[in-house]
Length: 143
Image (cartoon, rainbow, N blue to C red; front, top):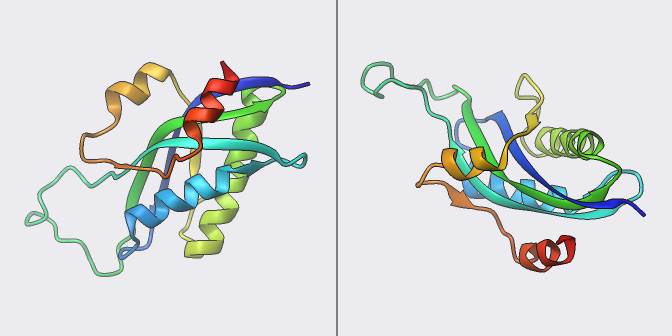
């Protein structure tokens, strides 16, 4: 039987200019619910946010068709053979879901396992929470 895992994650991707951030978060949470060929259950909890450019909009206004860079910091709770395999599975699933929902945005989403401390310290106060209705029960089961 695979081990229960809690994996801190960072997800980044380009999104179309008029994409809805809450919709992106819902897509990530929904995508993570079933991972891998064995269909293991997973729950992704965390927050999504825009990674806007470090200049004031008046300094360089965005073009109407300019992609926006979005991020998610959170935790994936699942079972699996190891962190590397779980991250590879969620990377494939999120890549496919983002492409299906938003089309080709030029590059696949980046999905990284990170330190738990980074999730706590680097999540912006303005970030929007993912739908995590089932997170508490799965985290309890994993512990």
